Length: 242
Ligand SMILES: NC(=O)c1ccc[n+]([C@@H]2O[C@H](COP(=O)([O-])OP(=O)(O)OC[C@H]3O[C@@H](n4cnc5c(N)ncnc54)[C@H](OP(=O)(O)O)[C@@H]3O)[C@@H](O)[C@H]2O)c1
Image (cartoon, rainbow, N blue to C red; front, side):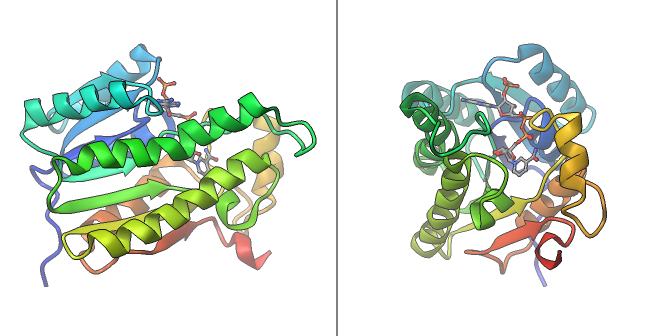
């Protein structure tokens, strides 16, 4: 049986400067991918990720706001120019927004969360498809997109939107491009503070939140498997059994 050999493949990870995106970028480099790390503003963090990538493979760090078509187009063109194409896209960049009641979310907050989390998937994927004829796309959703939760409705709506987007693309792009999503429960990154982390740990059968590497491992699994498309993989420590 042939599994996708990641060695030498070109992978673009949005929001790869820290957190889950960094863990995915480093694991892909370990597998021999050439990894392009996108970030919005934290250049030092992006450079650190790049250093980690370069221990195993080649890489590039490119700044672009994933909600901005022009910046994304430049980033994608630059990736293709340097590495000759794009085989793998991980749409990971995201923001959680303020945890507010539906009665309080402002128009601006709603737009910003939807723009960064969902519009970005449309923009980045469309630009990447100019170069990707065969390949794989993994979109980062969240348990919030499955069940809502303690986060705001804007965040949950954006993450649920990603699931519909994934299903639609899987149908349209098969069999050349396989499209999947992951729905992590809480993960130990800057997105959650210490107090929230303790509270969220009780929502797992394992009494802890996930580590970024555990999420990255699931992404590698989806990328290596050649018979998975149109699925959302839950990684949440048994959350649905509580
Ligand atoms: N952590 C969790 O508990 C959890 C659970 C489920 C799903 N997720 C999802 O997993 C993904 C990564 O989350 P994380 O916890 O790793 O977040 P994080 O630690 O806050 O990192 C966010 C990353 O996204 C980048 N980013 C943010 N806005 C951007 C924009 N407009 N354009 C380009 N890049 C942008 C950041 O770049 P800079 O460093 O330059 O700011 C950074 O690399 C998100 O989609 C999140 O919704 C997280």
